Image: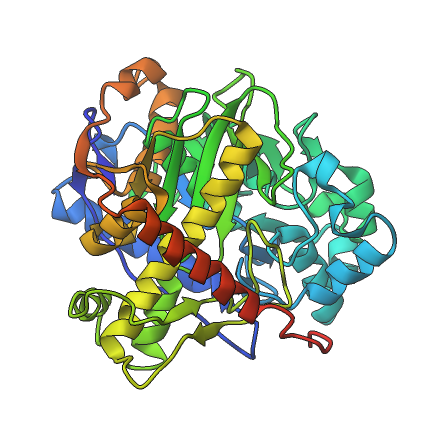
Length: 488
């Protein structure tokens, strides 16, 4: 995506990359394909606007955060498919670490995170343990680890041929289970516990600074000035710079972030403590985050696995053919339940079925699941912060679904506000890069770029809201304690 100084979209191109599912619970991507696709969309976005690299001030990178890739720094080839954030194959590794002392909370005081398959560290450990020769190569310094931002940065800045920059930013590092929130550095003891050689790890840098210059492809000569994990980028794009400001991104999963200021706040209600952003040498800003594994992915599942409709738009249309969910509730715990439950033993459940329920009710139940899961996260966030939200800024692919946004406002009983530019993840990365090179003077200039696009106000009465939410919580209990054997 290419943005102008006002934060408006100049040009956009996109391509969907493959989701690879080798077995139940495994989610992979092809790192080489992602790099090829990235080059393709860059070229096409420039062509659409009749622009070249000389027209660009800087490049910002945003990425799916915990997705993990290990590659050979001499050949540039990944040693294994990237392991996606939803992947659950590392459950045994997490269980072993938890049993060795401290339980799932073993590293929370240091990292802000529970022991869970979600995070990158256990995924690196799995690759080193499972790929022939990988551990030996890593220990002699031949392999590099990174989330997708590091992979793209390394390739853009020269790769194997010209010594690409091996770095990441504090937001992505804070999602690995390997970074100390107090020092913003890798924790050597945790890396040792996971048997990950320190030489594999990228340098941790701020979210807005000069990382290097693109030396290949259509962006050759353009400085890379910003890196933010996707949810932090969306928070930055929504200009949630004030303590207490929150946003919710509706994508494959849902991610709500609340700005808590310059001091990390450890959650007592199942949320994650994470770095929100860091601009250059300024103090880091922290956030509480509620991460939901499956929201938009449930719509994809209905489309691709069940063939209920040919597109996401058709799922929305189906959902609007009925007035309610017909008593059906969909709990999409395909990878267990994330915040605020953190139950890896949960699996997906569709409950409350009667002969009355039709495919319209199923489509509506799938959309409502997104809103109900968000309500659980907001409930936890209000409890941790002590400051009830009065409005929720929303972004991401699903916010074009107006029926969902209205139901979200109804269930939360707060206004839901969509900005004019809904793809704030890309915008946030652009903002960070622009700040690094002086394209924008400061964050105050960015505040003036934010513009309200649409607002949804609650319309549901309190009795019906309480009934629906009570039934949702009952449905969640039916999804628990499903996995009772070892995760293979």
